[in-house]
Length: 128
Image (cartoon, rainbow, N blue to C red; front, side, top):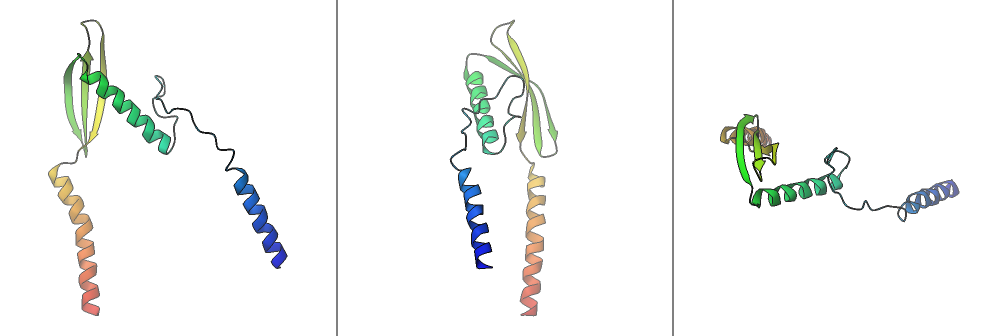
C-alpha cells in the first residue's frame, strides 16, 4: 500500500514539475485593433487594459480637442461618448465606461454588508 502511494506521489510530482520549465511567457500584452484585450486571460488581460488606458491618456493629453457627446448613467457605471479630433478631418469617436456608484448606491451596499453582520453579532451576544 505504501509503495502504491509513494509511486503515485512521484508520478504526480513528475507530471507537475515537468510543466514548470515549459511555461512560455507571452511577449507583450498589447491590445490589437480588431480584438482589443479580448484574447488575453487573467493577469495578461489587466496588463492589456492598463496599456490601453495609458495609450488613451497620452492621446487625450496631446494637442487634441476632446468633446463629450453624451453622458449617461447605467446602474453603477457612467458611460461617456467622446470625440477626439486632432484636425478637422482626423477624428475618432469612442465610448468610455467608468465605475462610479452614486452616494445612495454606496450607502445601500454598506447597509447590505453591515446590517446582517450587526444582527449576527447581536444574536451571538444574546446566546453567550
